[in-house]
Image (cartoon, rainbow, N blue to C red):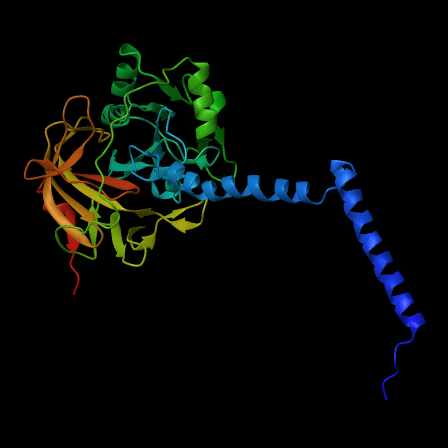
Length: 369
């Protein structure tokens, strides 16, 4: 049963309502007349608007920065433009010198005969690697000077043939020689036997070049590159076997479709970079034939890197038969029907084999079944 309101109840209800109204008015007056620091509106506005605008712009800016620059030698995107001068490093490839260090950081790699049937490797370092160990570093030859200088590189070596030293001295080449002028920028690894234990890194070598006042601004030739989505040209090929001279000295590049890279092996064993423990890989593999001439009883060679000749190019599981050409002051380029064939972005390996008895006698293209 509901209880009826009495007169006293009505009085207390009116008084309570009045007090609530007075309290609300007081609160409103206090907020209007009080200091701004106590206002809840201002910090909300300050916290919302400014951060949202740059946060939306950041991803776009980052994307533009990543695509703004590319390496002239690899075609890969860079966050910053490449300004440093390349280093052209002579790397020992005798059996006792393997596995080497630092080749995964090279933009371009050359392999060419030295003497005695072994080969020398020339690593062109520009866009990658700073303090990573490079070596073992070995002696230089006249045609190795030619390869290294074609990229504008500081020549890095330990000793050389008499003909090479004559060129370096008479033509005042900019080189770093562990024996002659730059020993402080190399070191010996005590865990390996001499002469297969001489190393350096890009930071030390550039420090040495700066100390000697070598030029920093040089002409670095650029290659032309395809986009990643461009379809490759040529016939199907799963890889290639290359015999430079000795039958028991065979280099293989086997295509790995998952990574779109060629895995490099020597005599059936993976060719490893000690720094990373990983097998060496190439995006593009060029094999070219050049005229070789034996100069002395030791087996020192002259290699013609000017006249051009037959060549193969392997890319993304395909092989193209063409030619190599080289203009004055330029690098070796692969051409087909008189036009340069673009490379895919990544590391390119150039393998120079003799033309005798024939170019193709040194090359066995592995066709897919």
